Image (tube, rainbow, N blue to C red; front, side, top):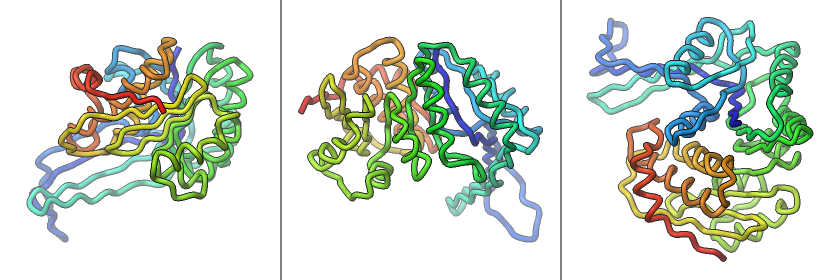
Length: 307
């Protein structure tokens, strides 16, 4: 079974106006609303590729209920730990005339120790042999070591953890030896404290983690992704496409990878599908994820080089 973890999900609202006029009434000419969060986006990709997953994390207040209901509408099952505080929300205001976006976000909710314990009770109910994607950031106020704690809990239950995060929470999580990590090149450099960019440099820096992390993927933008494992080291190169937006490409890549590996597919094939998913995500408007029709077409053109 597949699970995704988003500890700090949010309800994203986007509104469009012709031009924002201050100290006056502004008419909204278009509006969109959806649940947001990196793990949730991975669940969306898994579903787009024909799979199923359960979204875990924290959700509270009216916004948390709405978020959960909207996921049901998308065909995504969730089992969030309920919290007393209101889940995060954001509003993006887009001015058509000036082509300017303004993003407003509420802070992370306060989460009590009892609520954290409730989340871990749910984690302990995940069936052995499952795969769990841990993605995104840790809510403000929570221990940065929560990902590491979760990974240790999962490993004791023979559950594979796929980690994609940043900063201190990512460093501590990597120290707990998850099954797979997937930083982008910027996150990888923050993890190592280095400033590498070339394939040989990245491969050298990865050596420090190879004994503890079974699979390592470093995404490198338009150059694709590098994969490191005992099966071999690979460079997955995408075809050239017209990039409209890069937001969501990393989550799409990870969704593709876990979709293949959860079915015992090879690491090489997981990289091929993952890079195809990440590339497909760049074809759409801002915030969109990959579409299966695009993935099926692009993966035929992904070149895998072993080095």
